[in-house]
Length: 124
Image 1 (tube, rainbow, N blue to C red):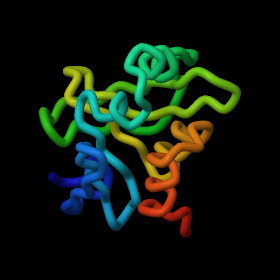
Image 2 (cartoon, helix red, strand yellow):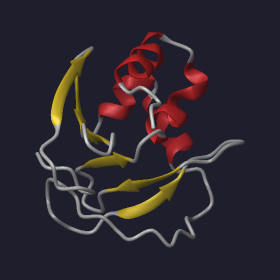
Image 3 (tube, rainbow, N blue to C red):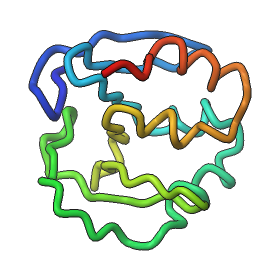
């Protein structure tokens, strides 16, 4: 699968039955439909958090879903530090730019969050 941002092939990292597609160039992350719920553990709480923010007023160009090719929509998480991310309009998955997935999982303090922090270093 190619990165929706820089078009480079992504590598697949598997953890706890979740295949995380990672771009080595831009450090973005693609999660297929249902994978974020597996990482966060509670599907209802996850959905409420991921869709609970105010609509994104983001000037960033819309990216194309690496699966269906349609332009993805912008979504915003709920919380003190909302995160704007990309969501496939057909439901194929979610795209997180560098640091966004870590920010979404920031408060988790669990094994998955720790694992992702190791795999996706902050770096420049």
